[in-house]
Image 1: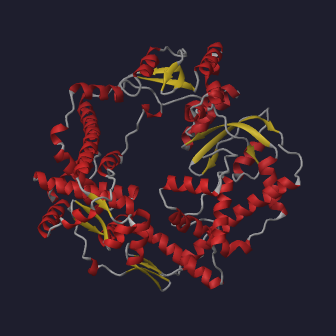
Image 2 (image 1 turned 120 degrees about the vertical axis):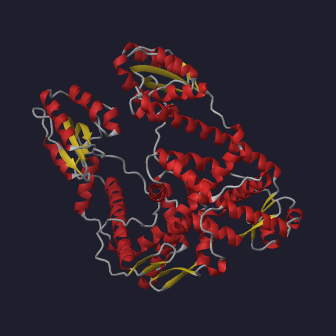
Image 3 (image 1 turned 45 degrees about the vertical axis):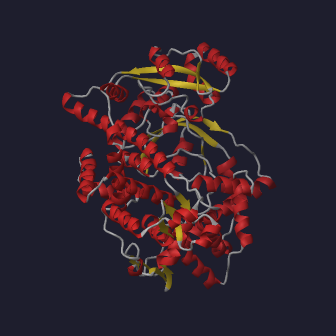
Length: 639
């Protein structure tokens, strides 16, 4: 149900065009000899000419002109060949598929005499920027800051393919008045705010329907406890408002027919059984005539982009089925037979050197940063006379897998699929840095009796149950606090939370938040919470960073465990040691990074190694990715 409402953002258009530009092509290793032998010098030259017209960014320098050294770390050189190899191991497959896609588009443009000029690309960028009332330069800057896409990459890998695809499928791109009107009604027309309960069987749905109809005011509470849709259950059944012409027609018809507080019958939907309760009908948004044209133009562009995505996918499938594509890089026998060649497309070769440079162009800075971190840690281990063994790496993977109640094989399968990394890349980028840092600092960590006492209090000790409202500015916080002071009841405070709190959990749950315990990491919140009493249940306005919190006392929470036994003590010892160890790891990394002399020729940045003393326990922005820790969960009001 979450797809009923989609927010538009400044980067929306980029997301749209990227999705159809980067179409995946399967590379089949068949008939390789015949395809490679059909390549001719004239055909290569022609394709190169078309590709040159296609690429509007500054052409890359020949490989011989590129610097062989990309970085120097405390006197240790990192070679371009090393960087290319690491980029290929991480991103070679995806970049090759993207290159194949681009080559096919270039060849199709040549076949149809379609040419995209520098001026075409500039005009398209200006048009996109104008839609957001910013200059082209500012638009490019936003892409670099928010999406880490360089101007060169944007022009070459996104705008040019987009324009080429538009030209190739232009005759099929049309938006009817009916489609535009439906989109307008979906965006600006009336909506219905509802709560939802989802069940996997009709029997359970009928049982829940009887419960909520017997007590309609408890619909949200029952949704939280019983709904099988986790996202809406966490918000007491609330889902984004339902609009016309989006999603399942039957759901829309039922929702719009409901009156406020009315509960629907059970609705079969996508293998589940849905119950809706109407919260309110939201009237259509009124748009002044001078802005209506702009709104319709924006919606038309969106519809055209949707069509373009579909037509581009159909075109790519057609090009793929008619092309002769051979993946040599991923075939051991073909690699031996055609050294230095990554793939062949209709007889035209893509060299490994070309693919490596393309990988550097797209992912070089981030991969080089990882290589710099890797080099720093290697140097530190050597100075300390320590090393990381294969046994250490396996133990670390096993430790993390156990935290998630998985076997090593299950964990590696999950993490590599989620992150789209090979086991080798995951081990090098995540596991090895964690183990290296632990090896450097493990003798510096001590867990004291005081640490264990505080840990016991934080996890098993007494607490305070409160309602909370989180506000974004002091003025609003003061106004809400004044309203709460004039009616000091739990029910009224909950209503204020559902109306004013900007924090999703407290807003959706009438102010309910996890209990506040001692030593949870927010001392000012703890102090205020433990000072509240039944006769004075309302807290003051608590400033916490850029947020303001108001709490309402609900009651004391008895300790989970009266006394600490050996099992609890051992578990606390392990957890606290791990947390203190990670703080020391962060401190050690900061020290290594800030005191290092680094020249990064790829990004043009250098540091002399004469930095100030690092802040204890605060990871640098570019800290290496550590093995993903288990979630500790929220034990206090979350910002």
